[in-house]
Image (cartoon, rainbow, N blue to C red; front, side, top):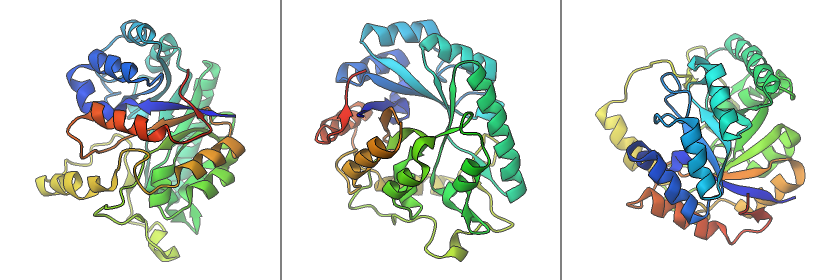
Length: 306
């Protein structure tokens, strides 16, 4: 089995905000045939977040031989779910992804697992798959067990799959290959970034000891769309200069990507490995994803076709 390569449009989000259809055309012309759309404005827009109707978007993709294979919807909990599903059905997409959760207490986590099952059942009844996408904070623990393990154990595999983000898995202090083996068939999609060799931030963001990664009563990690205040100017500068230094164009950094591809092909039924560039030091988002495509072509066990 070979995974097909995709691209999430979060990688070109600034370009999308200025000219969504023009950006879709540019990405398609580069040769990205499998696209994951990304809506971070789901409260106001049930589509891709930029006011583009489904028929127009689909015709643009069709024109260049590309297709939508997945959709990040945030905040999913506050979106118009029937409208979201209808929009994506028009696109021909069958994968709906919750890109991030917010976690506080164990009881709240269990309540969220119930909601994930309910959401997954709704999606399944409409012929859709429902997935959860991890960051590093899902590897924090309650009583020594990771949040992600608790989610997997307390949700129905028919109603919830994983979009495993290998970059954030690594930055939580875990080996992506080992996690791919562990979660196996629960993984339906793979997200792939790359870590820069000259990053100004450490790889491990969660800590090294059991005490460091254990959730405390006052801990509040992740986001679910609730307003928790705007970052200060200094916080924003740090994010743009220091935290963003961790990201390299995909295939140019230090992650063992071939091992990840091999493991995913062996242990999962993941149909796609989706490239994502959170931040780039390059002047152009389009140039950045073009560089990732060029660098990623050296790997085997993948396909660039639809």
